[in-house]
Amino acid sequence: MILKTKDFQDIANKILLAISVDKSAANLELKTNGRELYLSVTNKEFYVSIKLPIEEDEDFHATVDASLFLQLVAGLTSETFKLSINANAVAISSGKSNYKIAMIYENDKMLELAPITIVNKTLEMPIKHEILASILNVNSKEIQKVKGLKNANIREIQELYYIDESGCFTFTTGACLNSFELEKPVKLLLNERIVSLFKLFDGDVDFTLGQDALGNGMVRTKMTLVADNIYLAAIITCDDLLISQVQGPCAATKRFIKEAYPHKLVLSVTALRNAIKRLMLFTKNSVDKANMAFIPMIVRFDVDELSITDQQGNTEVVDVENGSYVDESYEMPINVVDLKLVLDSCKEDHITMNCGNGHSIVITRGSICNLIPEVHEKEKNAK
Image (cartoon, rainbow, N blue to C red; front, side, top):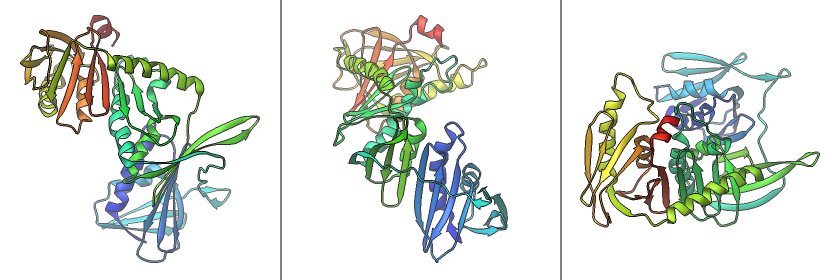
């Protein structure tokens, strides 16, 4: 069976993101049906199946270690590669290179992956691709903040995405409120593995939620996202206690966002991002190599300009643009990595920064708001 390398690599790299989050063990099944190849992967928490066209009728069925197979395919450089069965292994030929990956058996039979399905459906609705992409690209930046932080005391709920009919909320050292509208009321908690698989979709999806009985009065909550050639299903957390733990911080974030701040700054995303990038060069190359997830700097501004100064005295200046309101000059310490992650998720040309209460900074662009704390000595020492 001859396959186009690029088509497979696009899929491989996206699925590897989910597997690599916590290096979860996963199996991969390749199975043909006429001129269609079904690539299915599961770690028993999620199940994804992708249908790919092939040029000729093929009879092929093999199950292998997902991580090994996908990493190998992701690294191939030839335009096409060949798959075949060789005894108890899948043989892969790419250019002049040849590999074998052992097939997985169960009770002397080829392992067949059991799909995750929903029997008792409780909710169905379409979800636009733009919403999935926004959750993946924007809310994930908040989850990313704490990776690499020394002595980070992160609760389980702070590693989950809370989604309801009005948007998606994530919070760690700060918070991200991504507002959108879904057609029907829903409350979901999704982990990073599931959200990373949103990358597989390039169009709108059909969403289904359900709860299937396990016995002894227990139920299991499941969800599916389905497009023309992709089926994604997952067993998800739907714990009322966990949901209540995230609703409090969500409500508090909304209050901070609505607060009347003394200062409002309109700033160029490009100018601010480039300024921070240059300043971070000095931290990356410093002798004592700081914790790269926490880089404190001082932000000062007046009616005309905003400056950022690192701990070695290096300073960058950007203009405060039209539409701003600055009552007086102000100075605030921040973790510049938090600000950089927000800017990295921006597609807009400008952000609005509301600040000046001595505690928090609210950055808005369109329907997305990020809350970043000012970092005073107590918070610095906690890092």
